[in-house]
Image 1 (cartoon, rainbow, N blue to C red):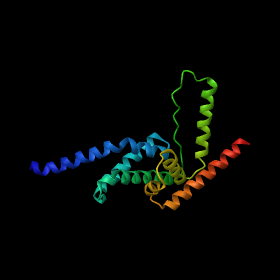
Image 2: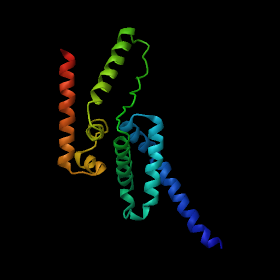
Image 3: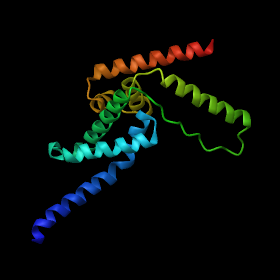
Image 4: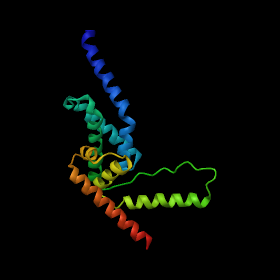
Length: 174
């Protein structure tokens, strides 16, 4: 009877290792898309459940991180579509330096608010594409894989997002 239990334990250990290896990265990725820690926790859990339920579809263990990332991105985007809202993550303030003046602290806060306001103009997919490309530094091919679309579509999302953001900045300068 212990022989029947061991494969189950081995599977649980493998799944536990898979979750622990990727949990932080996936949470951060989802959080950057949905902008709310509670929602990001729920959606991260949902993404792992989906991945573990369909792990038999994963043929190549080397591609597990990418596969999980795609599931997480799609789960977050689907959530934004379903909820009809796009919230944005708080951009944590950098640790204050001892030599930072009150004016510099205020300026940094205004810049953060300015950035958040500009991001609100973007669709969830434009925002995800920009974050993955410009913040995470991923190549367009990888962004396309994660968003489950073509490279041309990613370039379109990025171009549209940058155009909207540029127009927003020009309006703010006036």
